[in-house]
Image (cartoon, rainbow, N blue to C red; front, side, top):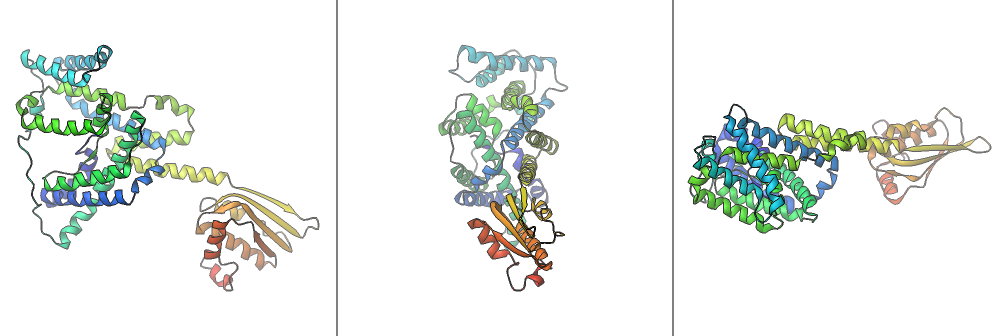
Length: 428
C-alpha cells in the first residue's frame, strides 16, 4: 500500500489549523500515531469483520467517482490541446501493456507527454503551476506548543478522529489490495506501521496520513506486489523533489489527469452496476447509500459509517423475521406449551411478547426455549414480563430448554424467579 497525506484526514484538521495554528497540527499528528499503534496492539483491525462487502464496494465506487471529479478542474476552460494530450496519455496507458509490461505504462505516458510539451513548446498547466515544490529534506523538530493539559484538551479530539479515519481508510485499502493480489495481509501490523509513520511525521513538520487507494491501485496495476514497491515509491519521490525538482515542475497536468482517469476507471467496480438488480435490495441499497454519502459529503468515513449502520439494521430486521412461535394445547385444555425458535433480542422482543395469549384461562404454561437464544437484556426483560403476567393470572409457568449462554444471562439479569419480582417488574 502507498501511504501519504489524504483528503479524508485533511478534512478533519481544517478547524484545528484555522483556530490554533499549524504547530498544533504537528502535535495532533504525533498523538494520532500513538493511538494508531495502540489500536494495532489491541487488534482493532478485527472490527473490519463488521464491514460488509456492499459497504466496501460502495466505498471503492465512491472513491473512483471522487478521483474522476477531482480531475474536472483540469478539463474545464483549458486549451483544446489539453484534451488531445489526455487522450494520448490514455492511449499509451491502455495500449502499451499489449506490447510490453516491462515498464509501467502510466510512467511512460508521463515521460512522453512531458517531452512533447517541453520540446513542442506546448503551453498547458504543469505541476509547478499548482504550487511551490519542496527542494530540501524535512528537519526533525519538536512542535512549538506548550506541554500542558490544555494543549492535550485541544488536540485530543482531533487526534482520535484522525486516527480513526486514517485507520478506516487504511484497512479498506488493505482489503482492496488483498483482493487485487489474492494474498492476505497482517492488518494489525499495518495499523502499527501507520502509527509509527504518523508519530515521526509530526516531528518532521507534516500532517498525518494513511493508505491511499488510488496510488495503491496504480502500484498494484503497475506490477508492484511487495513492500519493496512502496519503499521505492517513497525514495523515488524524495529523489524527484530534491534532485529533479525543476523537471518535476514541468510535468504537464494532462499526463497526470490521464493517469488518474485510468485509476478511477480501474478502481470502479463496474460489475456492481449489473449486480444491483441481481443482489438483494438491501445489499444494493447499502452500496448505493455509501456511494451517495461519500460523494455528497466528500467524507469517506461518513459514507462507510452510514453503510455499516444500514447493514446492521437490515441484518437485525432479517434475523427478526426468522423468529418462529408454535404452541400446543394439552388434551385436557388446561395447559399450553409455547415452542420458541430464533434469536431473542431488541429487534424481536415485540414479536416474542406478542406470541403469548394472556387472556386464555390455563393452569399451566410451558415456555420451551430449546431452539432459541437470548442476546441482550431486552429479550430477558420481555421474558420476565411474560412470566410474571401469567403468574398474576394464577397460571403456573415453567421455562425450559435454555442453552448454557442464555441460561447464564437469564440467571444474571432476569427477575421473574426472584422474591422481589413484582417490585422489580415496574422498573425493568
